[in-house]
Length: 273
Image (cartoon, rainbow, N blue to C red; front, side, top):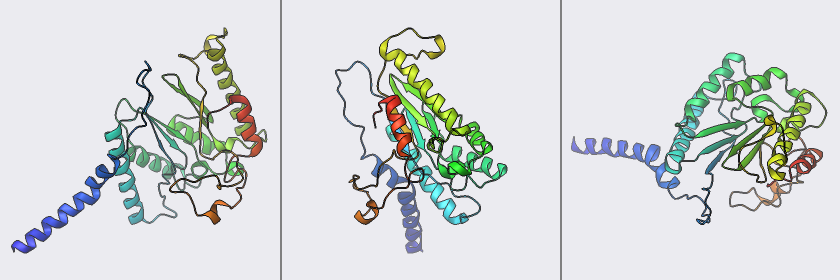
């Protein structure tokens, strides 16, 4: 009887370790980058998450879905508890089947996402749209973009500023440069935000709706697709792909932003990348 009781206790302890404790042991080893303490202004602590791909009803198995969601939620909640970021950006593909889902299913996925990735008061969370959320450029209809924007209070181009650090959030699928309803609106917003930043950069007199609080710094671009590049051969991180895969050419508008769209964004913003 004692042996059986000890066995049960060991199983319980193992479950607690694997499903809770391990996340703290791993994530507590991460640290924020060091910074110059002589500066009067504190740095902005930002956390980036991408491609959560919450499974849907068409392709996802319920057990796989449950397991993935549990692990992502534990990792996310543990990270924000330990490191306490001020801003969190989700860089697209929140859902795996957002482009195919009915209104009821989409609302259900949104509810699940906001539950799994809930944040306490004082932390701001922003979502950038990805192709799995609303589709690639030529399959997008206004309804799909609108329901995502309504669910996450976002837009095709958005400026987020925190203590003089400026983030420009862009819908990658709105950068096809063909003058469609998505691209036309996005280009106008890009230029408007650029003009707002120029107002504070050059200290020129601008109308009230063009003025931003704080001082100028080069904006940081955030979007789902990478900017145009031929392939991933220049990427040498620890988790980078094998050489053969890195040599595979990128398809413009699918694997990366179009070259002309990248040049346009560079011209408008002189971005930090």
